[in-house]
Image: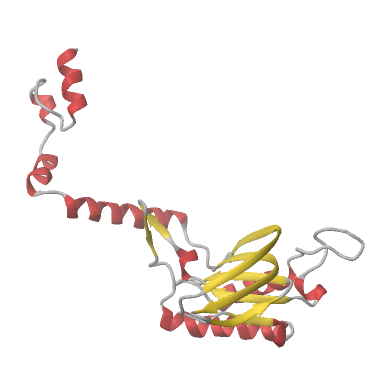
Amino acid sequence: MRAIIQRVTKASVTVGEEQVSSIGRGLCVLLGISVNDTQRDAEYIVRKILNLRLFGDDDGRAWSRSVMDMDFEVLCVSQFTLQCILKANKPDFHSAMPAESAQPFYDSLLETMRSSYKPELIKDGKFGAYMQVHIQNDGPVTIELTSPTGAADPKQLSKQEKQQQRKEKTRFKGPSESGREKGPPRSRQDPNASSGADGDVSSERES
């Protein structure tokens, strides 16, 4: 699970013309749930959100108080795009938990957070809706978190990306181009033959 935690002076969520939730000073948290997340991931993220020392105390000491210490509010917004994997320049969201599973998981996380703090101070957006999130970042202070048990394996992600790139190349190649790639390079048999790039041809002939 990934979370973007922002210290705010105020934040709100609007759906259409309706404001569905708002907070004053506290934290606005964007949450991205992955297909591999478990209850352990949710508990880790909740614990960190409530205990991160992102606020100063009355004596002016920075980074000494948590949202719970200050009795501040927390606004949570589900955001599957945090699980984006780029395929060249196109975002891919297959690592995000499907909505039918993510919604009860997200609701359970909110209940865990409310039971660990003051329920009336935990607000959220509207799951699955097209939302306008208005954030007045204080500082600015922004912390990125990834739960250790649900962290994606970089090697696996790299493998998936390479497989996707191969599929895309195969899809856009014509039959003749695919055939040329399967055979030996023409330049090895004929020094004057084109390698497929105009620059290569002129370089060989000039040399």
